[in-house]
Length: 274
Image 1 (cartoon, one colour):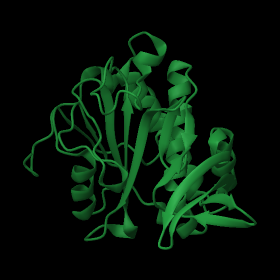
Image 2: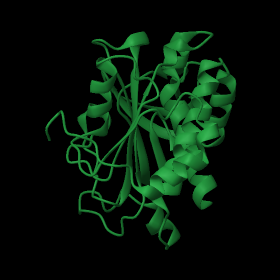
Image 3: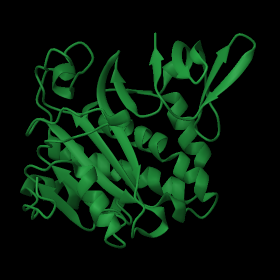
């Protein structure tokens, strides 16, 4: 997809839904760029951020041809069946402990998306460290936060998320580990309303970050992440495969895992739940 592709007009139902929550968006929502088809919303948002101060900009697409998740994975992004959104944020503008705000951005976004899904559909989605929303053991949504360096002020971060909304079936390699709101609820979902609710929820939790209300974010995350305690996990270290039992998260958002008589602290990387 050409990097200078011109944005399409935001669909009327999306524009109307966003207007209804405008007073809850704070600094988020200008501009809003919509694309019928794009390679990656994160890619477009990163180019915006690198070109200058575009904090608060939203990029949303009806389809991604190169959607991506953590650890170089792809994100299945068929047209009209999901939400594919990226927002340019600057958590280092936080009034207290900017580095901690940066570290907690992904967890804050997870809380926001879980809250928005519940508010819009009544469905409760669990959080899995560090960036997934689950229904049972199947993935509903993923989050990808990427730093932007060249030209971006305040070390802007592009916060991207995908939510499976209307899918009724998945390719064989995803069928046993992915789900959608429509599959779970057995009815169509208003994507425009969900889009607006997610933006408003992210704006609220972003304001918590900027205001230094870290405990509110951490407490909300722990309340929506039952697997963060008592779950058996494995992960790879330079010395080999490790195994243990989750023991929560610390104040910086790192996953705590008890293995034998030690408490390990995992900040990043691949963790497999058993």
